[in-house]
Image 1 (tube, rainbow, N blue to C red):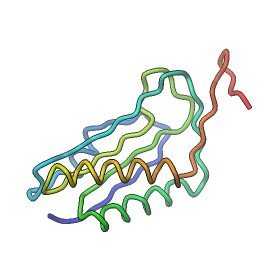
Image 2 (image 1 turned 180 degrees about the vertical axis):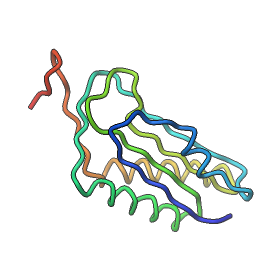
Image 3 (image 1 turned 120 degrees about the vertical axis):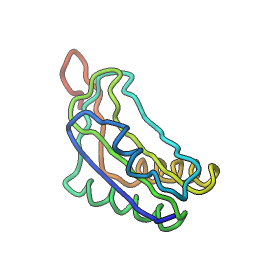
Image 4 (image 1 turned 45 degrees about the horizontal axis):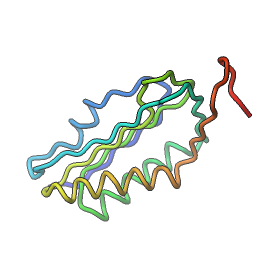
Length: 126
């Protein structure tokens, strides 16, 4: 199985399919995907370095766990039900795919500088 990583920060709606296609590999027996949904209208704002840091997270997890990984984070005003984050991983063993997906999601939450603000009556709160 070849290690690989893909990262994307975008203000466009997220599509799970290309991310899952990217991580598929002949040596993989499992693909695990985590999709987070917006429960209330939120405004996601990304730091200019968010893309680079997301890429670093993906590369670290791919190297550490020998998995193919991909992650996409959406920015801007997201309506209820929209995908805000998609993380997917593949590995030769399903436990490794779950571990890579979980590790990457946790690392993104802790290190990628993207902030959320609740919107009240269509206006972002302070």
